[in-house]
Image: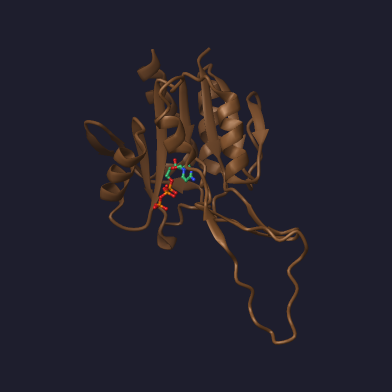
Length: 212
Ligand code: CTP
């Protein structure tokens, strides 16, 4: 019966009407998490970017494309008993051309102009009113995973952070398995590599125990 907000998938940041910038997130971990929480009896609001896997049944699905749309959908979905930010949000958006960018006669490459996206996890973690009692981030790292994720938890102000190594050789981003380290105020707990469904069930149970 608890209301839990989950973000999932990549975001797409448009360049022009036919092109966008994205990342390799499939949405598999966030989807498995929403499913596991729903299986434990939570009311789940699932805010998802354009993912490769379909959203789970039995949850409220809100589909978005960009980071800014994801932030608006998240703010609209609050209040919540817990919020879990599994989405791989683009850090920058592009000044979008209204018309398709055309090649010029000289064959020169276009210059894209980037601006920082809002940080959705940090925004919700630092709310002074209406902050969910439990806020959980993910940390996608390719080196010094636990150190970087611990610093990220401190910087953003979330309660727990789920760190994973998304280096190409791990096959985690876009793959079927995950190896995570759960970091909270008391330290870092490495979990064995397992299917994303199994990691999701374990994390969902931790959340349930915490809220109970
Ligand atoms: N996140 C977010 N909004 C953003 C960027 C990230 O809500 N604009 C969230 C992600 O959903 C995740 C956490 O912040 O829960 C960390 O995301 P990650 O990509 O690991 O880190 P970044 O904040 O992008 O930092 P960096 O690129 O420096 O590693």
